[in-house]
Image: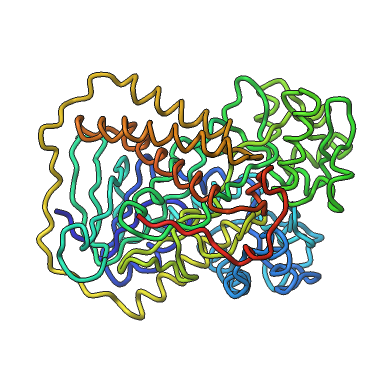
Length: 531
């Protein structure tokens, strides 16, 4: 048994920010299933949305967030997170984060920040480090963590399940006591205990066949929290990023929304600007509208992709503003300064998740969730671009403040070690890879950008059959990383389908042809599931 004061599952911006803030008060273990820098944060190109420009205001940022969220955002939560954003940005800069600057910026007492604009925003408010913002934030936080003696980072450690008092009948109520963790290198399962456990495990993009997310995004935190009895909310709202590079050799490469923010235009293969009649903001409309429009354009024309055209901008500007996108596209033979980029929508962001308040508190004592894994009510039915890193920074800070102000008592409990029983080494790994592929394909085909109840019901039946196979395999064989991820994406797929079936309307990212309109009765109404 390994005991800590704080157990953090995940090493993205949410987990690292929280760890830094609580480390002065106790020993912190950061458990991450691959390398410490492998997180969704690391792949975030666009930036952090925060009110910094003189022509901007907190009220405008709140209004833009509420408009994108299609009537489902919690206004109080939005106001808190937007209002506390500038202070968290200043902290990042003090840690060494260097955002892009310009001589022409209208700044608010900071460096001359180059503020970008993205879909759904009425002002330029996206702080960025060219087009590698997530990576730079991750590096700044990791550098700070490396200087903190109270923090231990355990790489290649995969959290299997949360340990709860309810599961072992230890005390009244349901309290999180830690987690069972699989050490990939030794093959052993270890017991980690702590009075505070933070889920910062990111999203679930890999539940879909096409995604902008890295391979680690298998919904582990949502699946673990659901099995432990926590409320899971609004999983029907999966955001599809409108512009993923379309190329047979390009694996899930995101073309940032900032390209459209700087004047990029969406065109069909004939060169027509098909967004003109879809929304007043045209190519800069909120993501749900743009993704549906691209999906409709592709189905109407039979094309495999659409085009993102920024060739009218100066070559020097494009290369300096988007060096990573330019370099990556060029490696596939596409010169974005001279020709449009072929793009398609891909699963990108999980707007629902583990139900929490704005301080990250779940309905299980001692268990907090922050970042993409959580559902605070900020994003509603559709996330406003670049609000995700903002939410992670603010909610990690608030969770740390709440815990430090009211430290939970340690629970004296005799927690049993992990038992493998009569499980043996897996004999047919093809079962795991086949089930993995089948789930991702059926989710893409039946639970994608446009849905129907018939497709959703078919998906529910197939997922139930697959889960029965996976459960049998899980209990008969010794755990592996692939098996654990398969078990989690099956659970998350089930939750997405069940939430989608329980919302009889179209709202934001949940577009159902059987209920094409929004129902006012479902405004401000979450779809909550519990195990």
